[in-house]
Length: 202
Image (cartoon, rainbow, N blue to C red; front, side, top):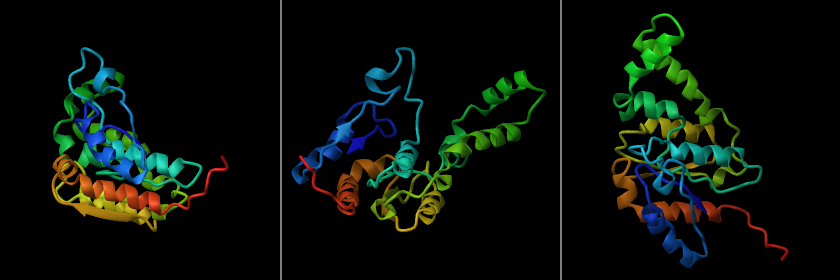
C-alpha cells in the first residue's frame, strides 16, 4: 500500500505507525517522502506548502487502469473546497494574488481573484473523473469536525462514485488521524479485501 504524507507529516513516523501493524496481516506499506517534505524540502522553504493529498489518492484510484483499493483519507472532492471554503481560505494570500494578476491585466477585485482560483482548482474536481474500476473497494474516511474539509464535499464524492463507502471518525483534520489509527487501518484492510485477488503465476 503506497502512503503519501498527510498534513504536517514531515517524517515517516505517522505513516509507519499506521502501516507497521498491517504487516501482521501481510499488507506492506510503501512510505514515500513527498516533494517539499522532509529531506526533499528546499533549505529556504518554511512549512510544507502542499496539501490535499487525499484528492491525489482519489485521482490515482479513478485513473488506474486496473481495479485497486482506493482509500482517500480526510479528502475533499476538489482542492477548491480546501482553499476556497475550508479554513485555508483565511490563510491564502489573496491580496498578493490580486497584485500578481493586476500586473497581467487591468485592476482586478479580490472576488475576481477568488473566482479565478476556483476555476483553476476546479481541475482537481474528482467528481469529473472516471468512476474507479471497483468503486466497492473505495472507502473514504472523514472527520466529523474537519475545518479543512466540509462534510458536504466528502458526500459529494461518494455520490459520484456509486458503491463507495464513507466512514466517519471523531475529531478534526489532524486529531482524527492521530487518535483513530485503528479505524484508518481497518479501512485499508476492508478496501483490500473487497478486491478480487488472483494468484500470481510465479
